[in-house]
Image (tube, rainbow, N blue to C red):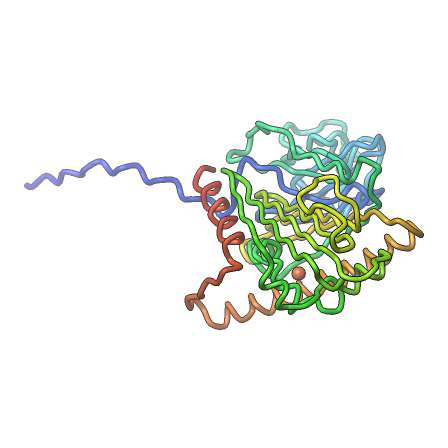
Length: 355
Ligand code: FES
Ligand SMILES: [Fe+2]
């Protein structure tokens, strides 16, 4: 009788996660959460977000452990969130603290809770590489929202496209002259020929573009009394969970485009891009500005124009993704404007591999 010797199998390497883990991701803005819960899926995990009556922000798995109704269909009340089916009440740690008509609460009556933090009116949620992972650092600060120097507003968009297509779009502002002619665009050639500098660190990329002697685009002239031609700048900073884009302009020849305290018209954009699934994402944006006259009215104008701009991006990106699906894995070429987006993609790959 022959004996079959079975070689011990080498341990299978753990599969690379779909998204970088052990990271804070944007879950929303503080002003969105008033007295009602919000259900959102992040990184394939359905989550309910709510604010307790005491004002604390909470994030739980969006599934009641009794009969699986989404907790986001329930109500926020004293003590936590009450399921909208049979009334179980869960506190912010996910523990059931009340079962109507029953005094004994089973030990298993608990739903998973996630770490959530509010920082400068942005809500950040932690997704760790294991279910008990504790945050190893704090979420980023964004003092544009809290310094009092800017007026701002924002919104939340849902994208039927993978999150990295939104990164690509934000990292490469050469598309302004083609996609955003009605708002923040301007001459396409000036954009394509802008002087561009790309710098990168381990977990960030920075793209700086200067366009001296440009014609100010419609959003700029609506918001600021420019005298004629302007010197424009765009500074884009990529981080895995958000981008910061500082763009603006000053009357030509009146400021040093490298001076961090330069004057002129400013638009400071916060862009939180959080994967919902592999093929969809959430886009949380705010735009801040420094009006010199009619502050509220000017801010409203800038926000309206920003909405129009981001609506235009959404149309392009979702159409691009539909076509990518239609054509499958066909190769794409790179051009000079792709240096920044490609660097950002490398960082995401590296962080995924280290998760
Ligand atoms: S499904 Fe939530 S209480 Fe029954
Ligand atoms: Fe755009």
